[in-house]
Length: 345
Ligand SMILES: *Cc1c(COP(=O)(O)O)cnc(C)c1O
Image 1 (cartoon, rainbow, N blue to C red):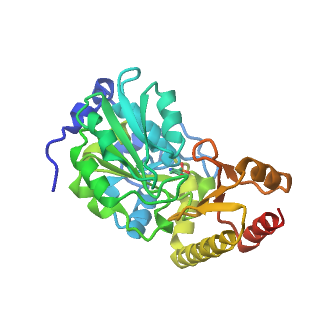
Image 2: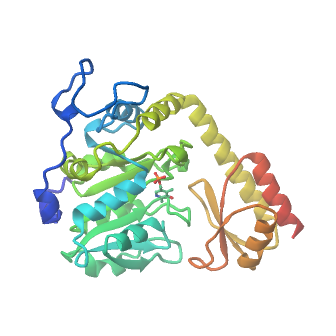
Image 3: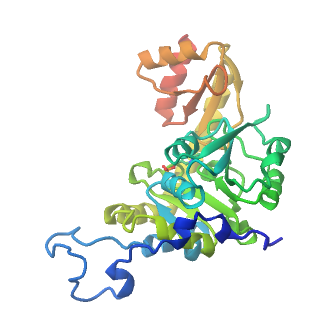
């Protein structure tokens, strides 16, 4: 199933293809020991040295946990950085386009706008699945460089059908960016095992959600070596700080704690779902493969305001799915506070 028919270099913007990246002195000298007088660093202090531009140690730890190769891994300042870089690598401003399936994660659109890339927004169907007939006109359109697929999808919580993704990977002539930000909460296995089959696939993951490190801003983008070459070329050389890398490694070592916290959040997701089902103000609870629930109410705006007045903050998604709130699963006592307020309404 390997796809030889996509010429990655022809998708890359000419200025990026030509670009010679900034090379730090540390790119040339690989050793750890030595007298370092090459980078205008201050010799005093504890964080006085620039971080490893390729984050080798952290990548090693992540690849052991996730099972992918360090040679196919880009680390960004949040996976949002990888989204921005994808636009900057592949999309010529005011010329090239990208596809998103809505409702979905808002940052695909924000970065498209920042980079002056026209976004083709195709609505998901009534089950929040991709309607492939809507995509067909764009499959061979040379100006459409990127396609974002979010699975589990934010804010709807559902997985996108695997067969549909296979079909799009095989038929689309651009890059498919599959966002697995919530994969740790899902019964579905990651697409990482399939990465080598698709030269046009980029898989986004993050330490922000399942791993609980949103404050560190570390996101992963898995891709072929050929694609990674361009991401490494375009990224800022020192995009992840030393402190962030060290802290992430420390948290990642506690794999048992990670598993326990995921279990806990999943059982809370189930409990909150059951309790919400008993409330007459709740119309629909969409099945979730993530750490949030999209819930349809009689009057979502009103309930949103009621919750705010009691300092319970949820996300009002009524503008994208009528009368819905997106509710993150919190600690048991936080969820109880939410439920108590809703019950009393
Ligand atoms: C939260 C989220 C991200 C952002 O991840 P960061 O690594 O924190 O930038 C990416 N994609 C989706 C769908 C998200 O919900």
